[in-house]
Length: 218
Image (cartoon, rainbow, N blue to C red; front, side, top):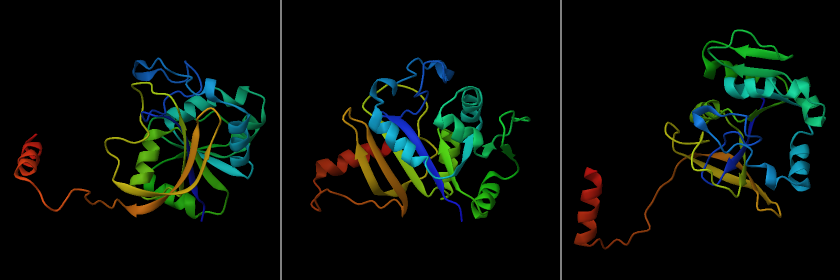
């Protein structure tokens, strides 16, 4: 059984759009691209190198695939070598032709096809970006680990990792690291349905009851 590992760069306000540069993804009028650059250091590079040290394939949504396919084949470095050599599985209903070598289009029922892909022999399936795909896989309990790199910036708007349409779930922290520049890298595994409770006193005042009634009507 292959594992699906998600690796996301994210701002404090939950945005994952265009971390690497201003022109990476300007959809929706996004003007804050490149927000990781002043925080990237040798330590983060080493963590990413370690993450990519063992064999992997890529599982990508259409927009992230298009960003990667227009960049990595034309760059010469260790990451480019690994991305170019990996099999790329692309989830899209609109792409008809994949020009990046070793790329394969996932057709039909996305969830069924990705389950079949997980059941095959092969290396881990790594996801970067691809927020819509990640949301779909989280809702279908198909993600095995979520690595969240939180950068100490807020950009105000942009594509969110989570948000409307994401099911309520619990996650278990399995590893955490931090850089000297304030980047926190936390690894989570799924931990079942969200468990809720209350920190309120059992003695509820009439004022509190009225507040709850008011909120329920809004």
